[in-house]
Image (cartoon, rainbow, N blue to C red; front, side, top):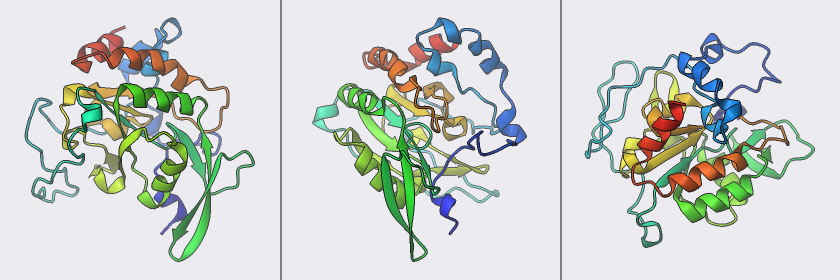
Length: 265
């Protein structure tokens, strides 16, 4: 197994001179939203509406039954699986659910040594132990603690559990994540690991996904709060800037109206 295949990451512009054309294209929606970025305290919301040339399947957000997973190469869908999340706990009853990505959203990890790494996580690959160097995004501690107070929080990453689980153990000192979902919980759709929110077992109008990769939420873009990919900028304040938005969303019975109004600015 290739070392890097255990971590699902976007390309670091400092390390990649050429990005694929699908990553370089920016949608018209994004162009319109960028005009308002400097004028809104919710500017991080508008950073990542990129066109990944991935078409989502036609879906009904109000469906109450669990849909079959999307399949590659024309294979028939499997039988519907059970929901990914357990029943809501008494502690989180009535709260909205926030699905939070890991890599380039909360942390950046590398197999190359990083002098200022916050964590060094040993990962066994094909019988050999490799060291993964992890940098925490600025203000991630404050962000996670606030999210844990306001929402039912779920970690959902397309990386493998052998890497992501120990990173989450070190990152989440407060038990913010009520559940952790990894690559096997994603749907592999047209070359992308997609986080199908309809399979969580939560009412979609009460689910928000925070992710740096639009391809990850291509099935439910209306539920997304996009964030910019983060690698090593220690002056970054995006997570801190998002807290007021989430304080408002925590009070909403239906998150669609708020997120739609922000997109329309």
